Image 1 (cartoon, rainbow, N blue to C red):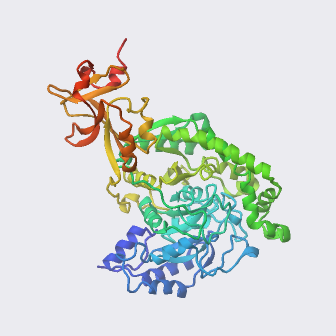
Image 2: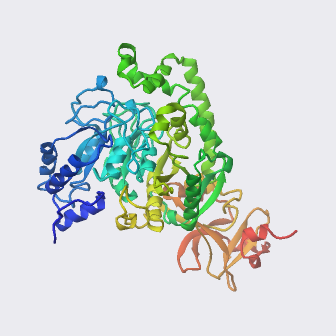
Image 3: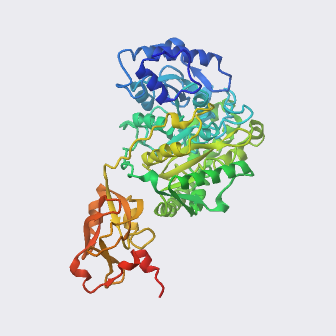
Length: 602
């Protein structure tokens, strides 16, 4: 096997792992080649500090008796946003006067290093993670990896550019209001904003501690999933860490799903016609992938977003830098100073007023998830040149948060995905979001999308199909249930499925050996296996096994659950009826299904 003599343009985790397994690369060789790239890379404002070559070699040397089969991130280089502790380097939060030397690395960083990952350095950010632009740093503006005249997005700007330009395989950011998604969109990356509290924030400088998430930038969804699996370790020392409550990914989820699209009047592109076209194309691709588009009202989400910088969460930001603001205000970047100063004057009454309003909006937004499995939006409606942002720093930053500011307030999970390029060569992306702990389902959908609609990786021309292997569906933990009556989509009892985490897998028919009857109450049908029979229209749902028992317990006689044979020859659990109950019932078999019977002419 020929050894690697130079690094590829971008550093896919899957690609590096394969090279290690084949003996074409060693961690020390990677470090030496990467060091040369780091030394000669254009100054995009990526780094605040970097490890020395000797320090990186020491991390590589620690892997000498290990292998990729032992460690999931064996020899994988990664970057760390400089509000996350790495024991080797100071943490600055992009404020030299605030800098300190940590005694240990952040909890999540320790998990990654234990899995074989090699840290490269600390990346630039909008000071105190306050901003979505990447220009608010005394360490310099972080420039877009495709066009240095444009913003890289923030606040995790350096982390995104490091991955996009081949200086790291993945990077850690943080995300309070969009900081892990906006830079992903602007640099043609996958950006995972996990469920709030899923990853520990011990050793992370807070922006809003109650909302902050550690985020992941990667070239593919498969790479991001590998990092998330390693990082997702429960931290008993972090009061905001939450045990993973994820359900198994519903089998077939990515093959058939309902996705919400905001009402046309709620879609904002801020005169960016190219972005509008690209979003429509992305929606069409999701339909081709098996999704059903549902127009939804996202006004409760938008109203929640408006609370973020007009409520008590500004007070949380003030807690971090308030003392510095009082004693050494010139240490703060001017725009950051102006924002944080507003947090000093909030009253307890202001806080409770905002909490009450947020709870109302969350209750309203919960209704959305009874209609759809995921919501798709642009990650941002547009992108701006650096000069424009410097001229209007607050207004343009606010526009970038239109689709992102509400997610942590409403406890949603999200993933930003690359979806194409404008005519000027700048990337565009969409975001898929869902309720808390839907992270695995979103990643499964993203991985399958990368197969049907490949994207290039970072600044390269390498396609995602080269490295984004798709895992088989994980059906463990789910029961397939065929429904033929009032539990069908849109009918009165369907919430008994969706409210328990049920996901529609397919609309199909039974084998032609069933008869269907309208029971005397007129509200439900009974399906009986009989000859001669016919094929009856059914829906097959995946129901979490933990909720299956309570679902079955609610089924009233004469209905029950038994084996139902489908037209493809498979057998699933499904609704059947006692034969005695249909002796006086109306035979409606010729309609072919309950929905067709309900739609009959009077």
